[in-house]
Image (cartoon, rainbow, N blue to C red; front, side):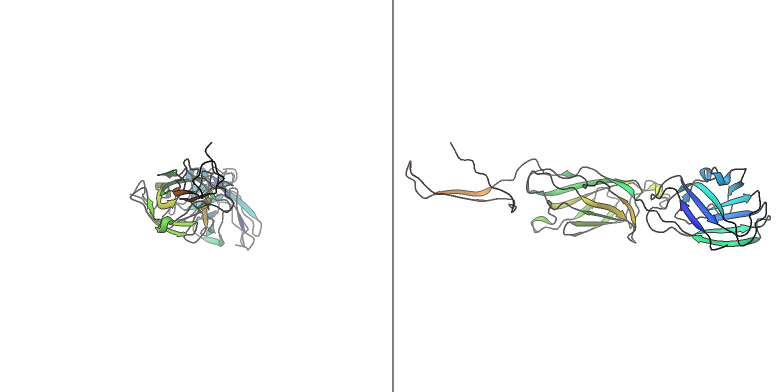
Length: 325
C-alpha cells in the first residue's frame, strides 16, 4: 500500500455516534474485480454493524460489504470493479462511534485480497484518528447544610457527563475564590454518594482533583462494556467555609474529565463557570462593645465601638453603623 493515505472523520466529537470515516489510500498492486478490501478497526473505535453497511461505499452499485465472520472488529468490502494500482480510492463507512478522549485511537489496518479472499495483495494503512471536541459535563446545583455567611459545612456535588466514566478517569475543577477549603484548620474529605463507588480526592488551594478508582456498573455481568457505566457522579466534600457575604460567588471553573494519560474526555462549557453559590443569611458579630468617654447627659462625647466579625472583612469592604434616634 502506497504512502498516499489518510483517514478523515466528519464528527470530531469524543464518543460521537454515527460518525462517517473516510479511508483514503492507493494500492501498490491492482485489486481485481471481485477482490476484497478488509478494514480492521482498533478496539477503542466502535461501529454499528447494521449502520456501517448502509453508507455509500457499501452501496451495491459500488461494492458489497460484510462484517468479517472471524472478527467482528473488521469490515470486508468486495469490489465489483477492479481497483487500479497507484490510483487514490476513498471508502466511506458510517455508523461509527468515536473514541472517548483526545487520545489518538488505536491503529486501523487495511489488507487487500485476491478473488479467493485469502491470497494477500497489499497490506498497510496503519492510521489512527483523534477527536478535537470534548463531550459535555452538566454540573447540578450544589447542596449545602448551611447558607449562612462563613459557616463551615458539607457541600454535595452531582454532575452528568455525555460520555460514560471509567475507573482511572480524573475529574478536575477549580473552586471559586470566595469559598475556603480545609476551613478552620480541618481537612476537606471527599466521599462518594454511592457506597459502591470509590474516589480519591486531592486539594491544592482552590484546585480539586478527584480520581475514580471504582465505579458501580449497572450490569456487573459485563463490566468491560462502556454502556454499563453510569454517566452520573455524586460526592460530598466536608469542612468547606461558605463565602463571607451574601454576594453571589464566582462559578466553579475548568470542570473537566481526563484520562489517566491526561487526555481530555469531557468538560463543562459554561463561559462564566458553573453553579455559583449565594448565601441567604449573614454571619453573627461576636464580642461587641461600646465605650463612652463621658456618661454625662447632653454632652459632646467620643464613642469607641469594638467588635469581632465572624467573617473576615475584605480590603474594599465597608462597615455601616446605624445610630439610635
